Image (cartoon, rainbow, N blue to C red; front, side, top):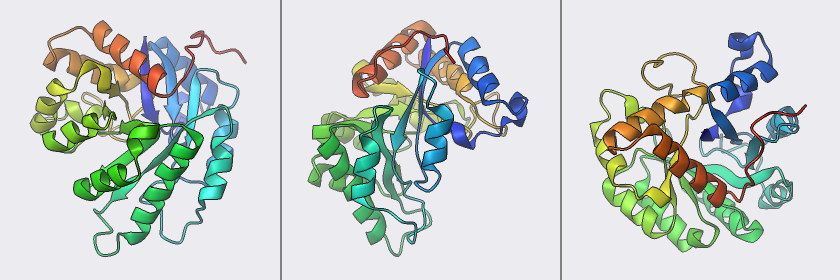
Length: 265
């Protein structure tokens, strides 16, 4: 059985599932996915996201504001700390830095990133990190804010080998998404070979970044199998081994108790 360590279930277009969230989850379980982490990107929509998944024991959630949220979006460390007290919340984020569209004024992103890591340390829950065109600053802030204490994961990894090595030295996990299946992802595949077993996670980032052969379509947690297949091939092991390694790492990092794979409603 597989775990999807990073998805946005509240963003998935349910028209593919007869407009039924239950059917999405049933389809995901039938595909061999036993647990999902539904990751927060918008605090205004967070209560609705939490309500949608509240009664599913095989779905955990995070609390946080995506770095690509607008500078004017409301955020406070105090509010995030309150959200994190909910037992359903197993992580802080997704947070981090994204300079792709914000190269000229990164300070507000950096301040929010620091606040997320500080909250993660305060509530003793791991942090989910997004980084794009901001590798040096991301590592610097993680080191300065002692992210090693709370732990966490570099999600949807697309950075360099040097970045991966430094993140692993800090005790962080590296999560591989469907990008590893893309034709132009040779560099990522080479890095993915080197990630130690005890630092490896897999994810879909649904509904984004659908893997080959579904590229261009809406992504879904069931497609985490394609990520596992590609990793098994390039790491010269079995899909079952990748599933077990990444599953065990997920439950350990996020302090989640493995549930019965059947949803009880």
